[in-house]
Image (cartoon, rainbow, N blue to C red; front, side, top):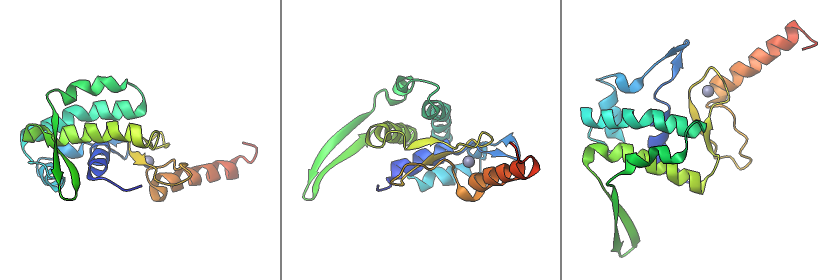
Length: 169
Ligand SMILES: [Zn+2]
C-alpha cells in the first residue's frame, strides 16, 4: 500500500498529543517546533494555520476512535474545491483553499479517503495508556500497537510479569 503525503500529515496531526509519563503533551503548542513541522508538509507555518490544524485535530482523533460520526468533520471542508487538470501524463487535481487552511483540509481529506480505500487500517494504539494512532499496512492487518518497540514490548513485559507473579492468572 503506497504511503501518501496526506496520510503522513494525518498521522502526524493525530499523534501530536502523546502521553509522556502520564502527562498529555501538545507538540503543536510549541511555538518554535510546530511551524517548521508544518512547513515540512508544505504548510505556511503561520499561527492561523496552526490554529486550523489544532481545531481539526480533536475531531479527527475522536472520529478515528469512533466516538463521533464522520459528518462531524463536514464543516472542515466548507468552501473547499478541487480543480481537474489534464496533462500529458494524466489527470491531476489541485486543491483550491485558503493557504492557511490547506493542511487541515488535506488531513481531513486523507482521513476520509482512507476510510474508503483502507477501512479499519487507521486505528488507535491498543495500549490504554497510549494516545497514539497507527496505520496498519500489513497484509494480515493485525498490528495493535503504535510501535512494537514501545507499547508492544511494554504490554508483553507486563503480561509476563503478571504471569510470573501469579501463575494462575
Ligand atoms: Zn502506543
